[in-house]
Amino acid sequence: MNGDPWSPTTVRSFDASLVASLRKGPLSDRTDVEAAIALAALVHDELQAYGTGGGESLNDGELASALTALRAVTKRLGVDFDPPYRNFSTFRSYWMRNDGYGSWQARRDLLEQLFGPLHMTLMRLEERIFDALADPVSPRSEVGWPAVDEEMRELRRRFQTATTPQDYRDVGNRCVTVTEMLGEAIYDPTTQLRPGEDPFKRGETKKRFDRYIEMRLAGAEHAAARSLARSVVVFAQEIKHDTTPTRREAGLAADAVILLVNILRRLDQEL
Image (tube, rainbow, N blue to C red; front, side):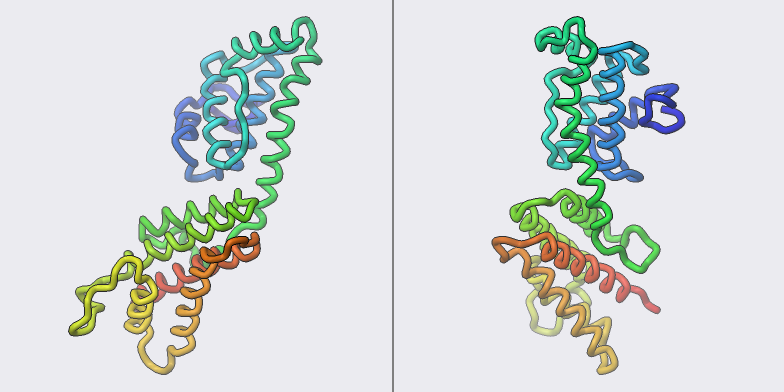
């Protein structure tokens, strides 16, 4: 699409590749919440135009692609959205079966029953963006350890959509996964093992972090920094043992993990 890629008032062409990308996964430059809000508005407006005065911008296949992408994005967000039609043609069949024949208002009402709650849910999720996790002081959006960066993205995405104690426990589990990936990234047994030691296993993240911190922050002058990094390790892992974590607790744990990742990444710098 040209102009705003979502607004039906400025669309001149349908970007099928963009919509197809959304079906497969999140975009690099937009959150799923942003994409879902825009897609929901586009699909709702197009269906309403088709069902009332006409003037829709998309054809049947393009509307079907947009609906499929919206289903995929809302599923990733944990939002319930299962429309009983897949394109313009099946929407027409749906309103014919549900008292929409001969009444534009009845068709608007049918759409509002489905899209009204969806719009409200997405708006609430958008508000949670302002309750996001901490950003590092570093201008880099990624730390450069691919597996760690991927898990960090998933952690941020999961926290953004979490609403229940079960969701927050999952945030805790993702915190642990980040620490495991971080342990893999920083651990080098060829240089970090002491004579007679066995290599630290993947689950022994605290030992891996301790050794890395000791080697990078040796000396009495770095005692406070060593203590901080070790405290973050302990705190970040405590959340997974909590059976009823709150958003605050999950957020603190996730922020701690983000802090830990960026502390250890900074220790990897020579100067």
